[in-house]
Length: 446
Image (cartoon, rainbow, N blue to C red; front, side):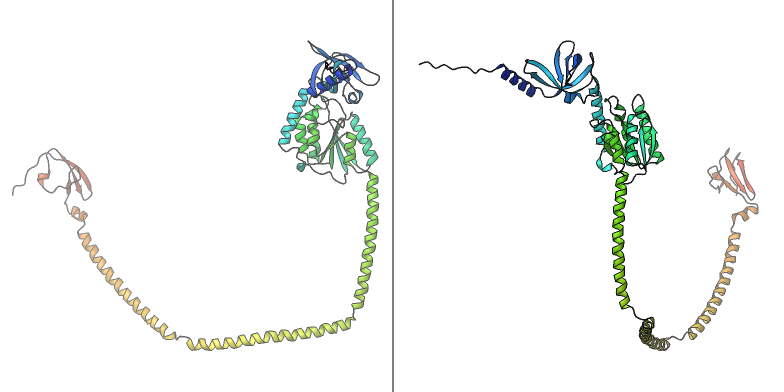
């Protein structure tokens, strides 16, 4: 008996579905760049086109649910980048891209710059929720930074007129896109902050592509918003649009209209709150008046006639006066008795200083006489020493005709042996000195 094994057989549909699942698992959502070709917009709203480059092409489909969020309508020859899932169209067995999002080529670089700036400012704490300020509960004046021609301005003004007609509006006009727009937006925000005319500031514009909104992705705009002296609400683009200004603002609104709604509470709500507070105030006043009336009744029952009250207080005052007199007299008497005893003790131990004073005066006179006698004796002795010193003064000897002879070294010469022929000596006289040359030296013959 022979056993045969029948091989597994799969249908074409099962094969295509398996291949589709394998492709979808192997290639997650990724960005792919290429050129649009054979673009078709079906009546259903789906987009069909071919994405190609110089060497290859691939079919692509973008269903209506995704296509409606695209910020532009592709045309033949457009350079684009698509975020797509690689799959297989099972009925025809065609390999294709299921496009989730589409953007113009180069937007990827902008998005990368957006992410880098966002990460930098976030690391600095510019987006820290703790830094952001709460919106004021009651707003009197709202500032708006946007273009005077922007549809967003009309939407904001319409919303404010409907919700809060009592609020004043100040426009700080600025272009919201184009070259140099970021600097002008920052200047408008800085002007509003410096003037301090508003309670809250709206920075807004309508939707657009990432290029259109790029002015709000500049660092100078984010730092100016963060440094504003008043709370800032950012209402830029549509709900799905995010800019650096949204993260730097104190509050982010999905649209300009939503920003106006966040900035103000409807006037009807304020009036309703006032009515509620008025009712609460009336109830509180009635309660307080009732409590005061009960307190008055209780106090009136305790009230006595003024004459009786004065009599009671007079009696109480007399008792306190007696206590005061009794309490102060005893310490004073004790202190007076103690002072008397101390006075007697001091008088008994007080020394007699009269004799001591007489002795001191006698000793002072004796000391003065002794000092004068010693001073006279010392003066006489000093005069004698001065006379002796004057007799020994060399100057007096020189005045009598004598001289002092010294050699060139300043040594005084006392004998002829110290003199050398043809040498110089110094002769000091009474009224000066003279240099003398020695011609010859002769010994004295006795």
